[in-house]
Image 1 (cartoon, rainbow, N blue to C red):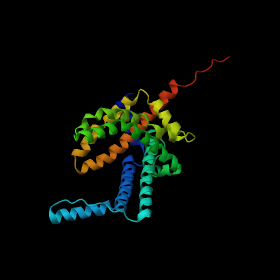
Image 2 (cartoon, rainbow, N blue to C red):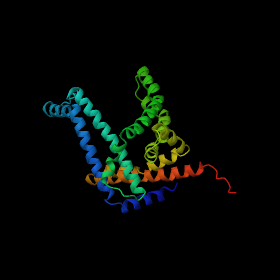
Image 3 (cartoon, rainbow, N blue to C red):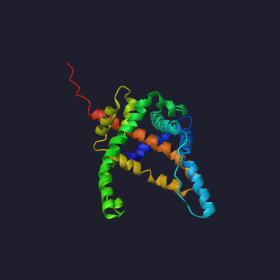
Image 4 (cartoon, rainbow, N blue to C red):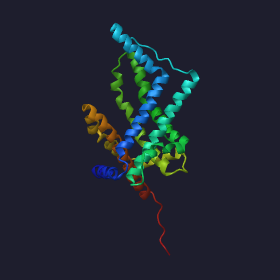
Length: 265
């Protein structure tokens, strides 16, 4: 796949979108930040940080303070609700990016559209996440055992090749959410399985596409205030490019796997 052409088309689609995708991405960032602050406050982490910071100023030494969750069971339920809302907004951002790429009417309200498929939007992220976690045990179990047995932490780096299967799994299921959105009648497991088939032999291609954004990421880190603004733009840019990749990849897959056409009589 021509990455340069794909990115050019994504930028052109973003230029044509109204409102400007930057403002939609900024809204998402602010909403997600608000959810994160609420969760940190409820979990007691924010108070713990404040106490540690005050102790550092007073004594000159950082003393660990254990976070104490607020609200008991109700607070825990609220934390779960906030995390689920973040998952919904993540899928909503995918919906928005797909509409921008396809030159459809797209706006700020799109990032909340995943709430219309609430359970499916959660499952399509949890199922691949669970599968990738299981593959990661190939790295976690032996490396943890070697660290415990030898007391040497360099096994964390020596064992990195064992992470390859989990990374491959991550890219195998990468398109599941897009497939789910385009096929409302399909089950989440079906979408995950189809993503694996669609990405067979193309995982490296998508990995390289992701790596092509490293320059943007480095630029965001080295620049102070401008880097934060640029990071918002890059987030929606990368999402639209990924939506374009999905459209191209699924179209190619369907063409190659279409049933043969019977000759007319």
